[in-house]
Amino acid sequence: MQPGDVSETGVKSSVPSVADGGTPVAGSSLSQEELDEMTANVVAALKTVYDPEIPADIYELGLIYRVDIADNRDVEIDMTLTAPGCPVAGEMPQWVDNAVRAVAGVGDVKVNLVFDPPWDMSRMSDEARLALNMF
Image 1 (cartoon, rainbow, N blue to C red):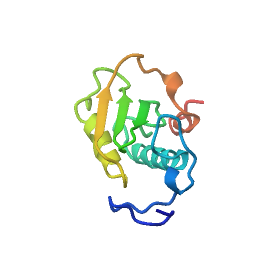
Image 2: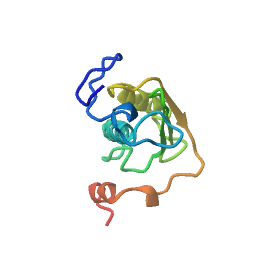
Image 3: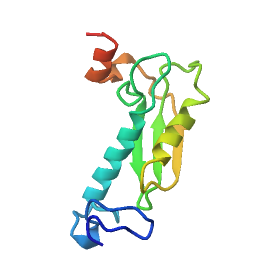
């Protein structure tokens, strides 16, 4: 398959697979280019999810601790909340799941809500600090 071809999953490839000259990744059947593109698309999807009480997306707030993309394109995410008693604690993981599932080529999605290490403001990006006027 060449970049731009449509795979058997119906996903249009914009980067080469390992078989098509993509850069191999140790322990993965996906090429570095495939992983980079999928990671960028997942991060873009995560940036569409906002904490309703804070005018910044959850990625820039530092609520996403880990994004793991498996060879079969399943995605597992570890995330936290700004506080364990967050009013949307039961809803936000589903928002994340829905956003990531919408990414082309993603298989199954699993979102783990974790509280270790606890979130603190040092995890926020400069973009989030600017949005919250915290400079």
